[in-house]
Length: 389
Image (tube, rainbow, N blue to C red; front, side):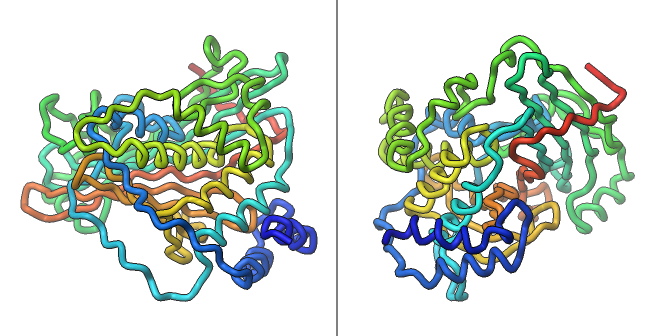
């Protein structure tokens, strides 16, 4: 009996625990079963992307999972810090493969249809103030409601959550600077490619919750995969079986024109894009539960993803953490963490961490995160605010 069949059998036994709500008992029980299986060693190969800047935009498009303050932040966030440590934790616990396979079992049981495909996220980002004296943190909530039925409307609902000093240390410097409530950035500000210079002033106060009815290219759209718009028909045609899904994704990647200059390893670039495509499927594409489960299984087969144990995501939820590195150029890295709830198959959050040097020489962390509050089908209707665009 293969591992997938064992997982399916265990899922039936744990049906009540894995029926759609996060259950610690269910997650622990399923992970215990997975850990007890014989581990299949992954092929040893470095999964560090080493292309030149010609691939930066493509990798960024594949990584984008939500609208984050348009014209404020760069799609491609890279690190200028030293290469992160690759030491493996000795703490006993489930491996990355086991966590991902458990999530595959759970997500395969998710609802397969509804009136709306809904994603709800909270995006949080950090950047320095215009004088590079302290770090600011801002955020935005975003809901997207996509409807297959022609009598239902597409909606996007968002709210800017305001800007504040990121840490108590940053708050002390902010207060010494007069506690400003808005920040205007010079166009020529040096950012070391960690963020784009905001085109309008940042405001400390939160904005009003706003709804926008989606027209134009959104008509008939089912979202996008790796930056390419997908119709409902195209999404339904994505194969659900693991090998067929991998062939489908690799065939799409094979049509991309990847430059071989500036020390770029095209094979590793394609492996990284495959990883990002799978994350894109589980984080928002309205594909079938079988497709989403197979995306998790493909991730479980890839090298370079490490388990880091349980952690709290930016919204305070507990989940199993997986990490990998993105090398955009030789010597330029970003650390990526995926926080997963194995009991539901829900991707809780994706967090990118970089470092920068402030004006006084202090090393500071800059994080960019997307927390997923809801991903999936619903028969509910959006609760629309009074303000409409």
